[in-house]
Image (cartoon, rainbow, N blue to C red):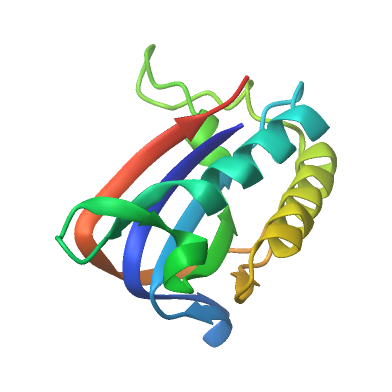
Length: 147
């Protein structure tokens, strides 16, 4: 499981011109799954995302978690995170989970986040062409991975 986490002031995802998900201060998560991913990766990653201390405290140090600042989550499926462009000019996506597997993992991950997050968890639409708009906070961008 691989995530690109961006700390944002606000973020929005649109499908066919309509807003599918929108958040204020929090994290935008671009999430990709491998075929071998399961409950262990989902549980670990949900705990990591909610508990990661990347928000500023009173002294301006990254010392507060999403929960502590009342932050929100926008979760967007992104199979291209497992794209391998090391050979040729067209990426290979053989490491990405097949859509039927990834869709279930995505639903389980969103549910795990909702169980841990005291605030709102919004999503894009799995498998849809999405337009993602964000305003970075910092910017702070991290790549998280759990095999």
